[in-house]
Amino acid sequence: KSIDLEPRNIAAKNNLANSYKSVGEFKLAEKLYNDVLKDNPHHIQALNNYANLKETLGYNEISINLYNKALKINPAHTNILYSLATVYQNIGDFNKAQQNFKKIILINPKHSLAHRQLSYITKYYENREHLEKMLYLINDTKLDNFHKANLSFAIGKAYDDLNNYDNSFKYFDKANRLLSEFYNYDFQIDKNL
Image (tube, rainbow, N blue to C red; front, side, top):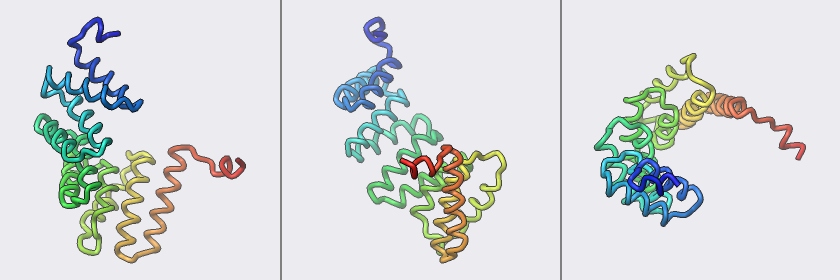
């Protein structure tokens, strides 16, 4: 309705495109993203959302190009860097994925998801610097359980690489307990189903 009242309202078009994308109407979403970007080629949210759509549809190279266009507008946008890094990770370009996860961590050292994803593609027997950073960060009392859980998963993976299975299990166990608390999960409810 707002687009009918204001056909040039690019924020409304972008929001409608997101709605179409979420219900699987990909062609309608793509048309609206293109309309927004035709009116404003520097609309960072539309670039990001369109890149997400292209990634969802398996057009990884197009999504990479769109993420890079958005990053030219704001090179410190950690959500876009994260999306770009995961595309690289998914297509097996681990060097570029690592570079982007490391950029995120430089911008926001507490970005626990970047630490976790970086841990999946890091061999800790070659370099323990990242592990040391995570061990320091996990003691930050301002981190909530969600972020501590992500760091714990990453630390557990690092210790696994180092064949320190006691510490690996300790951190994987801690991560699962923290996520259970974060999501208020009760195993007994599922057990009784």
